[in-house]
Length: 485
Image (tube, rainbow, N blue to C red; front, side, top):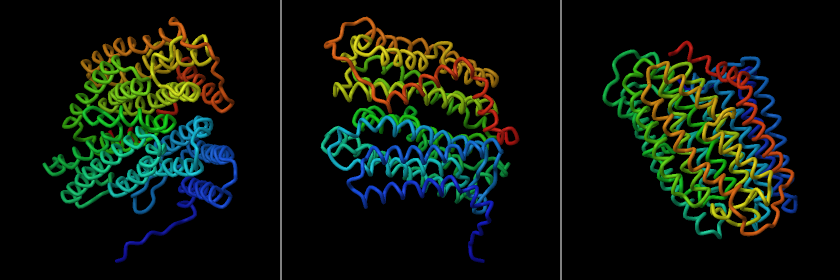
């Protein structure tokens, strides 16, 4: 019997966000190719407007509780998938706003930058809905392909070229591990559908265990958790700063969507066999990232190691392996989105003017731009977990989920790491507010960057002061886990 798919109007409606995204990136590509004299800023605003419309469509889907499966259960649309699609679109909109001024310094092309960004976002949106191992591999490589080009986008910059080559080599290595793990699991189970694994209550075979471990290693590379973090600092430093900001949150969020499905919904019955692996990686990632960040002299490398530590915090929620743990992961990702992208927005504005990412050059920033200094203060305090900002609620949420499952030692390690992280964040703030600047030239902030700063500062304050609405969204998005854990 031939393997065929039938599409109903309801199925097409479920795929409408991806269809519209494909149409949008096609329009951007054709406009840039057919009308080379068109302003590249116009392409950015057109992309942002298009993604804004798709975001509103996803919000409507979420409110309505739209759900369904496609392609013989290989593709699933549920509240969690819709949440991550909207999350990725929101991130991409902020990245495009942050890129408008930065790309004016790039001497050639620029139009394909927005096409590649949209292509990466489309791949990550598809990742959020995959329900089988084959689609996982295809969508993961689909989204990563654009990043291979974007990381090396500054073709005349040796650091960007080196970062692109390193990212490509490690990405191919991770893809090989993923493919091998998939082959082992298929050989042991005869299936590639996640929900089929959830129905298998027999004790896992050695082949299945090794297969899941290989998949976890490959996904560990994508999120940058220790010991799969080696690529993070060099790629963050060498890539264009807006691309670094994009890499720091969107691919990690899409990967966590897959991790939640596999390690919570799929293998929830055997969570005792894998939860301690997550606990160990979480503890090591937090501790290593925070300690090494202290020695950094480049702000992009500091944010890279800070990001490794933040991934360790998110893994606390995954280690809880509960409905509350899943909720806390989604909420923490929202807090991390605003604080981390906001910090990178300050870095982009500063480097556009000074052509420097050295921490010493941030001395006296408060005298050159009180707005940037205040924004950086808010973002760093949130990343450190200071109340009443978003980061405090995010850490409290994952700690509460872990405590409820008896992971007291992990919570203690997380608390100690908050103190460690506070040190290097406050060192930067000390430079910004206490040290004297090397020069007193004011730093202008353009309209697109003001939009980014207002959105991110507002998000950090709103999630910290009034988290209830966003926690409600997280709880609703992980409704599926209530029946599977």
